[in-house]
Amino acid sequence: MGDSRPIGIFDSGIGGLTVASAIARKMPNERLVYFGDTAHLPYGEKSASAIRDYSERIFHFLKEKNCKAIVIACNSASAVATQRVKKLAGKDIPVINVIDPTSKHVANLYQNEKVGLIATKATVNSRIYAKRIGKLNESLKVTMLATPLLVGMIEEGYFNNNISQAIINDYLSRSNLKGIRALILGCTHFPLIKNEVASFYKGSVDVIDSTEIVAQYTANVLKKRNLLHSGTPRNHHFYVSDLTPSFGKSTKIFFGKELKLEKKSLKA
Ligand code: DGL
Image (tube, rainbow, N blue to C red; front, side, top):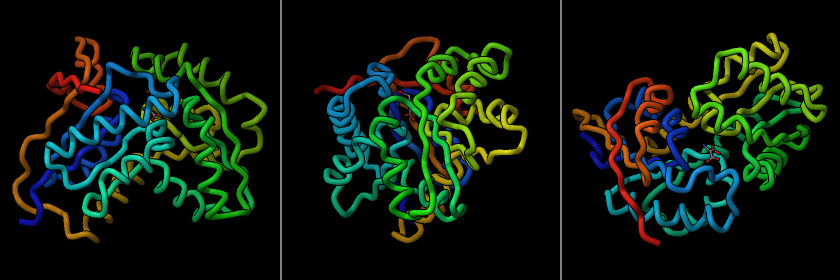
């Protein structure tokens, strides 16, 4: 039967559902407890200290829900709050972020290449991808571009159309992304524009979507720690700190089906 406690997953909002969906597909026996901090999004525009405080509150909530592992399904929170969450979690609760597995994947895959990253301002300003990848593989050069318009655009349902393609093309034409061999989609909203990014490059650049990489990494960590569940799966729970009808509707685009969201305000 294994360990029936849930996996806790959090993001600034509903974008992290792309990661939750990949984890649910990879480990169908696991129960998920998801928290989207919709009252405070976008994290990408917030200070590092605010993101750390929000992440701390969410961690306590997920711990109360008896989560056996925590996945930080947000690049902005992964960039600035991983250490804080790991410290709170201690040794017994593994904390997985989206940046480390993706950095490892990229560092193993390429040599002497330029790798691009598009992400929120918080993630780009932290320079975390450049630091992580540079430490693992000195031959790689990481070049970064903050693309703040893309999160709001995707949440409004603007993707796979002429307007979104024009905005994406404009960002990807910027000079600091010239000559890249691969582009990391450094935001959990961006798997939804993967096809548009790929169509801009027409096969000349690998587009790296971290959702599957993180799901596989999470499965490996749970297996190694003997935390996998093999019994009948129970229902997932999806909480948000602010609930509007549009969040409910958007769950379909991020998770593949419309979800029932429960509102939960977290106290400071
Ligand atoms: N999903 C968040 C990330 O991966 C971006 C959204 C936000 O800025 O809140 O960074």
